[in-house]
Image (tube, rainbow, N blue to C red; front, side, top):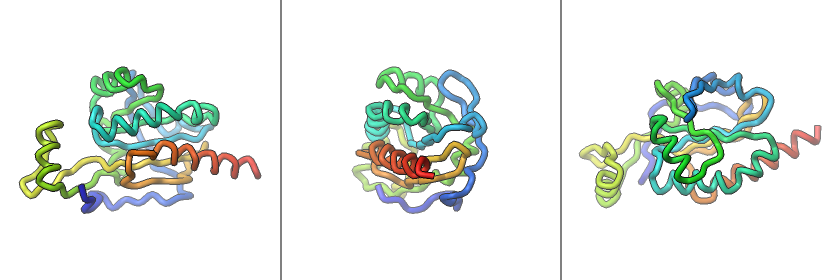
Length: 187
């Protein structure tokens, strides 16, 4: 798939405070930016529970989760799926972190992570048949771009990854957290 464009021209700059948000975790609890105060956090956006790429990415975050816990850095996976699919996905893959729903897509819009992709005929057919993806006649798909935001204990964006490859991404985020954490301790 080829990224054509992000649907909202939002660009949160590194060093700026991230926008307020309201999410619902898989236990149906509200999660807001203020709830994350006092420790860094990873907010990663992904398109769909159970899809191949999203499963690999989630399992890779699971596999390095202890490294994040050691640095008191929770991970939150965010997609437009509902609580039921989040619970099934988390249970099936033994995910130790929260998967959250953005009920009104406000955060998805504020963070500018929804995008339009151009698919090949083969990709379109696969996505339609396997995931019932809403591919348009011109082989365009609107979905969540795989993006990750690393914020510090005060809600300041310290690093972001846009339209990432799911393989190896969790390790890259972990490595950046270690670099940022060591930098923070030096002062």
